[in-house]
Image 1 (cartoon, rainbow, N blue to C red):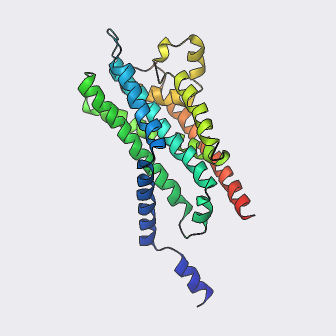
Image 2: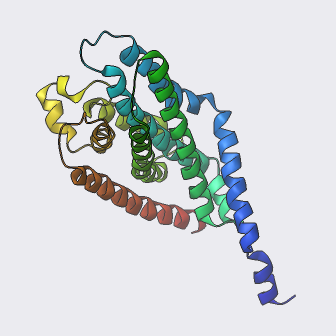
Image 3: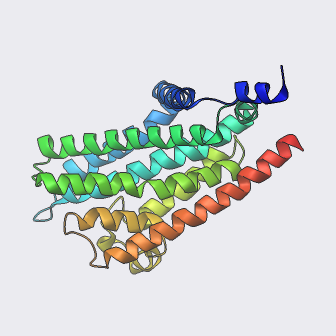
Length: 264
């Protein structure tokens, strides 16, 4: 058999590529569903916090139940992105899965696309659960258009954090990744006003928050409820876009460096 024939046989067809993408996403979803270490921090925590602070505390005239759907929604989708990409990629690198996948005809983009798609699925689940809790137990009443804008904002806003998680996954080892993600994720979420309204935080945190990406996602989500701090939408979109592009560039550099170490 000629070299050209071998090359053609090893190159996936369009149909087989679609199947590769589908199977990669399917098994990524099955894998995470069976991992309590992923489900608990990404889905249970934002839901539990919303029940404790959004539904249980007396708030007077302040509509805490609606407000915290937006901020805990942002908190939840960020966690999905950081743990799914940051911890997931770091662990799989440590187990040698990345080396194995590079040795197959599977395009690298299928691996990352599957993780991003599954991240969006879990993000949708979090937003849906928070919405159901707010409607049935918190008396939240929003227009359908508002729900759609809020949901789409949170899902789209999670993408820059997927890129950031990918960068963390290639910059950290399997043992250090969970600690590194938590070290960045939890303090930045608190300082950005995602746990409690930014207005009640000390002035120091209010000043620091504007340079934190979670703050901008939270403000975009709150904008759909007319409960944000009043800054322009363009400011938040630009901040998240630059954050995502910068994270993606770092991830690409780290990916190439990792591939060079593997093969060279």
